[in-house]
Image 1 (cartoon, rainbow, N blue to C red):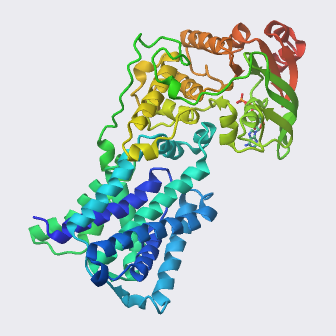
Image 2 (cartoon, helix red, strand yellow; image 1 turned 60 degrees about the vertical axis):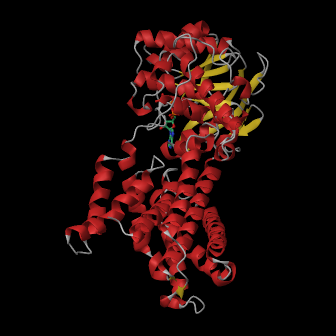
Image 3 (spheres, helix red, strand yellow; image 1 turned 135 degrees about the vertical axis):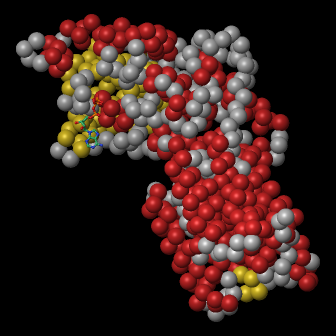
Length: 564
Ligand SMILES: Nc1ncnc2c1ncn2[C@@H]1O[C@H](COP(=O)(O)OP(=O)(O)OP(=O)(O)O)[C@@H](O)[C@H]1O
């Protein structure tokens, strides 16, 4: 039923859509792909050898390699100054680049202007599908790796991804460069298919078409761009078969589909395909407590860190302050946190607890003073480096990667202790499989430690509030931290759940971890903490063992008012 050109154009459309998928999968919206494709196509046509001299396929191969390299280089050059932009601002900046390239090519003499340059037709359906297979292979194999999961984590929650030790800037640039390489391949294939390289083929409409194809197909499953392209490319064929000749039908249906996808299918058509992830069999049910042991094998392949001996200082805050305009959120706090200690941080609403832990974990820079944490100066060190030093945390308002499963969330948590497997997985080396298995086993153990192994395959966003809090702890534990910061972990839990959680937190400190616990449940803090620090209006008003602090008149006054 399909003509040869339809078969070729399905592959070409899918390849171009993959260049959008590359960034959308990492939560970025770029419209510069048509620019990368055109720069790559023009350069390849100019520098590739004459097919009459070297033969069609060698000439095309060289053109494709040049195209991918030029596309990557263009993306890196554009990405370096624009990667700090988010959402619509990145889209506008990249669109500006693509338009500037198009106008330049249209007006330069050597490009042949609007007429473009003619090239021989070399691409056959087999060639187009082979290149598509290669591109799809990259996304298929890279998805379930440490790198692929880091990109998905950035898409779901950039801040949490950074706090898990992921270098967000480098990963975003990596995704952008991949988009450039794939767009470059598309540009070359397009030219050698339509026998022409002309600016009109790389304009705004082309960019929107690629974006719509990727969105309709799906941006969370590697097969999405192929599904999207097959769907949208066959529409004109079906029209022809039905004898309806109307050019508006395809863009109309594409627009309509995009609307339906955005409203009802956020993961696109391919998003309906369930993600499969095999939960390692740890044996012994879901209630064990051995997140760090080797009993189940595999953890020897992890990059676990050296922890400070019990009692050593892991964090030293001196004169730490944070002002927001006229609000003194934290004032002149001096504090030490020791390894193996469970330190409670309490205080009324707005006392400055979250601001203080945000400074310790490097999310917020202090206005004055210093936080020396595990050998780094938090606030002056990027968040992912503070995490790499051994600081791991949960958040007051859940910052889970909602569309990923519980197990995948914890796998991302293990980013710092697991090995990169991307290149080895692409080369199908057995060691990559072993390392991925070790990462999975480690993640499953962390889930088991918080009693959530049974929920491993559940989507994080669909879990109950209490389970989400426990999952955040498992994710934080997966980084094998030396300092664990828990921001109101018992919020929303019933008494039984809170009791179990208290037991878990105490056992973590008993294992030698330094735990900083922010909690409104003062009973729980009194029950399990070694030491308690009380903040009020940003200042430390009391510190000591729980019973002492609870009896301190300034604490009673802060909580209950002067009358009490
Ligand atoms: N980003 C911000 N911009 C402006 N003011 C802020 C910001 N973050 C916190 N504050 C202010 O700093 C003060 C301390 O807030 P913080 O959230 O640290 O308190 P908290 O003790 O964690 O409170 P809660 O228990 O309600 O979470 C509050 O007055 C708050 O309004």
